[in-house]
Amino acid sequence: MSRLRFVVASLLVLGIAGAAHGQVGRFGPSPARIAVPKVEREGVWQPAAGGTQVPLWPTALALAKPDSGDHPEATGNGSPLVGGRMWHWASYVTRPTMTLYPPKGRRTGAAMMVLPGGGFHAVATDLEGTEICDWVVAQGMTCVMLKYRTPQIWETETGKPQQRPKVLLGLEDAQRAMGLLRQRAAAYGINPHKIGAIGFSAGAYLVADMSNTEERTYPIADAADRQSPRPDFAILAYTARMLDDSKGKNSLELKPWVKISGNAPPTLILHAMDDSTDNVRQAIAYALALNDAGVPVDMRLYARGGHAFGMRPTADPITREWPGQVRQWLRTLGML
Image (cartoon, rainbow, N blue to C red):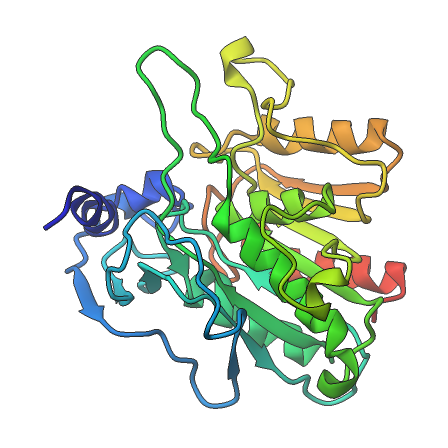
């Protein structure tokens, strides 16, 4: 087994994904210690009935590989339970896709791209992907789940702060997906000016990155890449990799790689005060920076909830209430 494959497999089976992806919330006594058998299978993740998976890039186009190189894609589980159930993941993703789910009932014309977390080691396909889409389509919106390239390790040298990869493959995939959605808006039955993004943990970082940049690190492939890659609204749930904690535990200074643009879209931030994986200061620092740049930003903070709860209801109010908060916020924006 290669070093990288060993690292990814170990993170997922030992529950260190609770640290890389996120410590689970309060689901009973010591939920992170619940032993869950590891399952990993080679094979490309496929959506259940109702989802249409679309390649992001032309088949003939050579793409930069994630850190695993040509390792076959794999799916599996093995992390701590969330809401009493396992969550599942895809990793070793070399050919990213977006999966479209049509709205149910009244069609609003709006669309939401879902970027699951997974610590950039994997993509949490159900907990922060398809389960979110089940809710999105019930609001009359088209849901688009992104399966982006992983794994990609953020190097940390001894005695030095963590470094963001110079080329972040997940960001390239998200920008490409947004361009495709706008170019194909008529075919997909969506309004090209009502396409937003919601991200969780590492996925929330990608949504923030999308929100604050128009530049691409890849060559223009076709007309889709001439569309704006910036979402029309952004939702960040328990965001990660924002805070420069080298400045002290009470710092509200952002990492050097977090750029803020006054053109970022209206943003809603969700976070639990007891998140032990990504301190709430991550969210607060980003919100303050957006506000200083003149960007409309709302926050919903709850005392309890931990990290990586997705949309699975538990005893913690945030897990049951945040979907309603998002619905109301979208109505205020005129998206619903």
